[in-house]
Length: 181
Length: 225
Image (cartoon, rainbow over all chains, first blue to last red; front, side, top):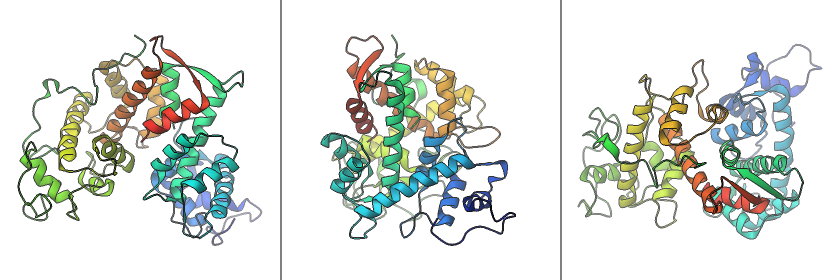
């Protein structure tokens, strides 16, 4: 899982190593919130050489998997999140060819295509603009961008019952979709 | 109509809420520069040369100079964040600051000048007044019930499920989840712009629109700016 060997000694070494990180940040009630997730991810070293995630990105990541709308993640959801972030991290690393810790609009576009998103140049530009600082997108913002994209896509997909790429949105539902991300 | 709508246009109505209290937007007579008073002891030199630009409130100008820490003549998200606090003294969050900067940034540079800042302060004060009005028990933050009542009074008819969703996303986790001023502003701004985006597409005003995936994404992403 990368990073330093984690967490305090945990009874039952056969346990999932991820649980060590999870429990260490107060998953006592079996759930972690955005603050705890931030600490957890930082301690686990998943960001590697990159800057650790900011709190807002952590909140976004929780909302992506927070099926019971509690604002927290259980351990299984945390594991799922971990796998997803690792996948995105690998992508990011492969595009961050100069190791600067940032990617530009073009690299973002390539990454999105790679992940199977088919977006118009205008949409990509709008996303790049939203998430870049001086034309560059940091790892943390890249993750935030992908989380939003994924959540919005899920929202859309579940409503596209005929799988034609079109949805009839009622106002209420549209608002809910957009603002829950 | 299906929207409820709300009378806001670009922000809350001036209404009967009166002028900002003296001493700056924190109320209670706090001096510009934050609740602890200006650390500089007075207006600092800057691109405006110490003269209040025409049409700008002198207090807003003074505050601007304090907040514009690098004296660039512009305020960034970071500088703005340091200037604004919630009732529990936490700084305004990044997202809300970003939204507000974008709203008052005429140059699309990601920063605001003194004119934008002056309008921003008025904007915040109006929202603050509304917030205080909806915070019926004067707890300093807005509960689930207070949020629902706020939406209703603003003219929106939204489901309790939606309010619950917002609480899960925006509220501070505690035995009594509630929403701070910054997030309340954020919610209302998003609600407004999302409603506008929807209404633009719903030319027949039937309360629903047919969107392609691309359209949907573009609408949302550009409005999130």
